[in-house]
Structures are given as structure tokens and as C-alpha cells.
Amino acid sequence: MFAFFRCMKKLLCLGICFMCLMSSAQTLPELIQIASDNYPSIRSKRAQVSSAQQEVSYQKSDLLPSLSVSYQANIGTANNITGLFLPGNILPISGPPAIENSSNLATGSAAALLLQWNPFTFGKRSSSIAKAENAVQLAQAEEELEVFYHQIQFVETYLDFWESEALYEVLTKETERSEYNFKLAQQMVEDGLRSGMESAQLKSLMVKAKLQALNAKHLNAKKRAEAQELLGGDVSIVQVDHRLHLINKDVKRSTSSEHPLANFSSQLTQVEEAEKKVIQKNILPDFRIWGTTFGRGSSIDANSQFNSYSDGFDFNRTNFGVGFELSFPLLEFIRNKHLVKAQEFQVEASVAYDEQVQLQLTKEEKIAQVTLENAIEAMELAPDYFEAAELSHEVTQSRFKSGLANISELLQAQVEVLEAEKQLVSAKVEFWKAVLYYSATKGNISLFTELIN
Image (cartoon, rainbow, N blue to C red):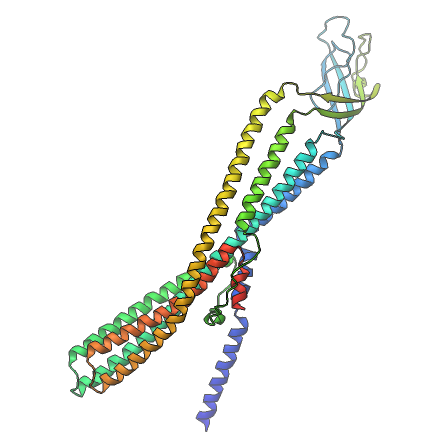
């Protein structure tokens, strides 16, 4: 009675542990989302989108006037009533020269507010804004492409991890099968029913299975680490999503979504077109409105009479002024036409790349269609192959035990059931990889995830 309760207690604990494990396990779609949120290259593309959006705001702010505040104090020769002016935002106001050349020093100071405004730019501003907005769309397309490719890479690595784990389980079973056959042969040798050579052959097969299982265990750990790295964070893959064993052959064969690569190449062409328009407008005139208020001080007056040095730091003249400037780059078109022509070639190259992408996607779709059909057909045959091989091995094992089958028949049956089980694992994995490939050519990972759900 006590033994019964101890057994029930162990089963209960195992059940609770299993339920906790299942609740903590994350499904493959959830892991795909984690990989999309956390991986550094995706976060980098996301930051580039934000940077491009700030560039749009910067280009739009060009409509606002600029206002500069400047102050300077200096000491220099007194040969000009304005004294010494340093380069900057202070507009010098000319005055008469000194009466005679002098090496005497005079102090001076000046302060100014300088306003510049470009109320209209003959389309230059709008073309720059359009280019920046196209750059945002290109950055978003690049982020979408990066996310999509990373999702495909992660799922493919995850399926490799699943395959390695399934093969390890297969080889573990093969080890158990080999141990059973070896012990069976040993017993029959002891009973004088079989020769020691047969026992040695089965022992060799058992050791080989153990070595293969050890290699499969190492490969499984490697594939697990690769999948965890692509998650981009400290997330452990507890177990393989059990729903992958439930093969659903009803794959959606069409989708209207645009492939991220096609979208990226299209946006790239639009950016090149926008850059061409910016260059074409370089030969248009510039119009600016200026406004300034200006104060200056000098320690020498208009009669070249020196005052106190401190007078140079006291504003004794103030001015203000407004005006506009219209400038025409008359000969700029000679140089600018070469830039326009160069950009036209860039547009042409981008269009050709877009066409190449379309051809490539069309080819990949055709290959993916055939691959998927073959994978479905293989998935229909593999279970029958395994079932037949397993039954054959059980029958041969029973006949061997009864002395009706020789060692060669048993070895062949055991090799055959191992190969059939490997084929079954491979068929399942290749089916999901075919679905993934098909989804990749359609540019829609949901074709894969929806089939799991």
C-alpha cells in the first residue's frame, strides 16, 4: 500500500513538472516575434527609420527664419573709423579712412542681430522634403526586409534544431533496439543456439548506434545555441513546438501581399528619382530676406581723435537695415548637367535592379511550388515506409529469436527501420522547410505560422 502511494506521489510530481514545463514553453510564432523584436540588426534598422524621420522634420524647418546674435570686442590700428571686425555674423558698416596712416591702437566693439529668411525657394525646399520622405519609406522598407529575412533565417535554424533533436531521439531508440538485440543474441549464444560471431556483430551495431547518438547530441546542442543566438536575447528554447508534428497539407497557394524585397527595390528607385529632382533644381535662383540691427563702439571718433579706451566698449553708433538678395547661378547649368546625367544613370541602374528582383522572385516562386509538392508527396510516403520497416523488424526479430531467421536478416531489418525512421523525421522537417520556402517567395511569413496554428 505504501509503495502504491509513493508511486502515485511520483507520478503527481512528474505531472506537475510537465504542466509547468508546457506553460513556460513558448510556441514557434511567439519565438518568431521575440526574434523580430530583440535582434540587434533589426533594432539598428528601426533606429535608422527614426533618423530618416528626423531628417524630414529638419528639411521642413528650413521654412523658418534663422536669427543669429553676435558680439565682439577687439583692439587694432585706427586707420578706419569702424576699427577691426572679425569674420562672423556682424555686417560691417563702412566709414571714411583715417586722416593719416597711423600705427596707434584703438579699441572697438560691436553687437548685432542678423535675420535670414528664405520664404520661397523655387521648388528647392519641396524637392528636398520629398527626397527625405522617400528616404523614410526606403528605411522602412529596409527594416521590413531585415525583419522578414531574419524571421526566415530563425525559423530555418529552428527547424534544423528540431531535426537534430528528433534524430537524437531516433538514435537513442536505435541504441535501445541494438542493446535488446545484443542481449538477445548473447542469451542465445549462452543457450548454444547462436554463434559468438553473431553476438559480436550485434555488439558492433550497438556501439555504432551509441557513437551516432553521441554525435547527434553534440549537433543538437550546437543547433540549439544557433537558434538562441538568433532570438537576440536571453531566451531559452525549452522544447520544440509540438504542433510541428501535426502535418497540415492545406497550404494557401496564393497571396496578394507585396514581397519586401520588391518593395525595397521599388523604394530605392523612388529615392534615386527624388535625388534627380533635387539636382535639377540646383540651377534655380536663391532668394533671401535679410534684416539686422547693429551697434558698435570705437575709441576713435570721425576726426581721428582718440578717446578713452573704455569708449571702445560703449556703443556710440546704432544702425538697422533690411533688404533682400536674389542671386542667379548663371553658369551653374554647365556643371550641373553632368550631375543630372550621372543621376539619370543611377535611376537606370535602380530600375534594372528592380527588374532583376522581379525575375528572381518569379523563378523562386516556381521552384518553391515544385519543392512544396514534392515535400507533400514525400510526407504521404514516409509514414508508410516507417510502418512497414518497423513491422518487418519486429517480425524478423521474432523469427531470429525462434531460430527461423539468420543474423544477416536481423541486421538488415534493423538498418532498414533506422533508415525509415530517419526518413520520417526528414520528411516532416523538409515539409515545413518547403512551406517556409514557399512563404519566403511570397513575402509572407504568416503563410507558415497560420499553418502551424
